[in-house]
Image (tube, rainbow, N blue to C red):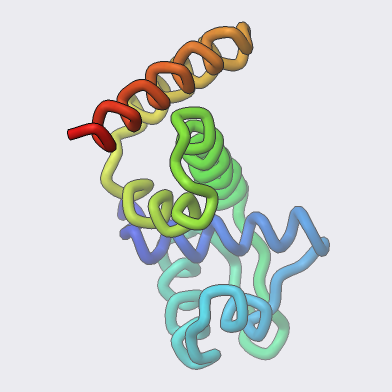
Length: 145
């Protein structure tokens, strides 16, 4: 069964926590995702049934190889979109919420194309400077209207 956006959020967080701390606990996920531990337990059981992780009651859980692969890809998607929004000049305080709002609605093909575009900008900083100049001119025109 393909993961739902909610399942993806959990897998992404689990993967990131394991990378960061070496493990992920129900309490860590509840805190990170701002949900009740009982909600985390229910989702962990769904992810276990979906073969994304192995869950043993009272002992914890580990990602399966397919769960790790998906988690790594989901973290990449999130970081890529953050980088893209920064490059195109989205205000820093909006980036996390914007990424959360769009990441589940883009195809992997769109994500790959955004990656290509981000690479294009990163390969030559003058491209970013040129984009910023265009944005400044557009803002000035808007203020004059």
